[in-house]
Amino acid sequence: MFREMLKLLTKTGKRDLIISSVFFALYGLSSIAMIVIVFSILFQIFDGTSLASLYKYFIAIGLLVVFKGICNMVADMKKSIVQVLILFSKSENA
Image 1 (cartoon, rainbow, N blue to C red):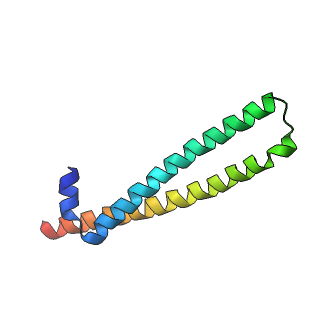
Image 2: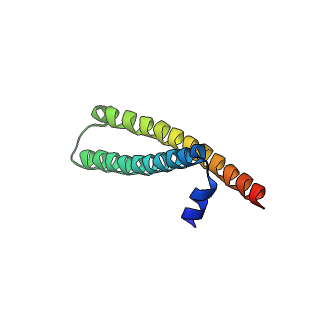
């Protein structure tokens, strides 16, 4: 099925598919990074570190949330373009 989909896509469509896949992967990796930071914060709190010294971790989580949102928007936009291109090419072939 994947090969059939690639045959229907133009070079632009294939590029958009690759971009979408990369941004979905970055989206997933940012989730992993957020989990690591949260556990790091928890371990430091359990060790008795004050919350005031953990501000850099909270800033990192905030930046990751923004990055994750941007990755999700770009990936969904490119995925939608690829879907439209596939439907358009199928309607031309029919």
